[in-house]
Amino acid sequence: MSLVTDPYRADRFAFEAMTKPADLVVRSSKDDTAHCWHEMVPGPHELVEAVDVAQSGPVTVGHVRFEAFASRERARPGHTPKRNAMYKFTVDGIRILHTGDTGAAFPEDYLDRLRGEVDVMLAVTGDRYTIPLDDLQLAIDEIGPRVVIPCHYQVRKLTLPGDAWIYPVEAFVNRYPAQVRVWTGTTDVTVTKATLPDELRIYILEHAG
Image 1 (cartoon, rainbow, N blue to C red):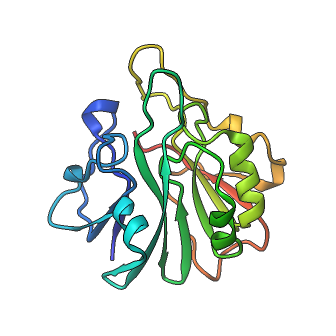
Image 2: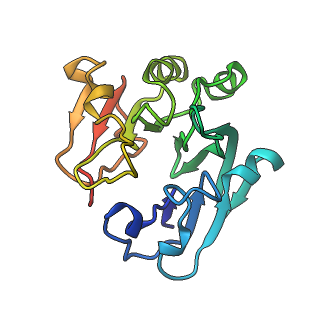
């Protein structure tokens, strides 16, 4: 089974569109084209709305169990934060948490539910429009994932409207010792139960665009 998380709108961000189909698409927002453009994924697929799962409770779709955690974008002057959700799912025994577009520190009850229950965290690390890096680092320390994969940071082809900008990945990874950081040099990484590291590793992927 193939699964796509938070598909972007390619024509908005000058990235290449997806060409491979997927069985499942899960998105953290219904109305933010940076995180919800499931129409880009070719072919028929089932769509999981994390904001709905956060309200209704865990669901199982195609043998994948989803749990979600309601959140909002980062509050800032002149902007009403949109609703979104973080979501956790398990594939081949690997427990994955996608932090969606969350814009604030994890509430204590979320930390209680996630502590020791996450193997891989897909972490938004651009800071300025998402969770502050201090709060993200605290959540990682509390939850204890074995692998963190940064996402949602500034890359060469990313264009944002007006004078908007976000931090590059180095602003996050440089908080950690060199032995924790793994620059893969590739656009993908394979993680299995057998290859999960004993201690935290941060895998920095090459962006596909």
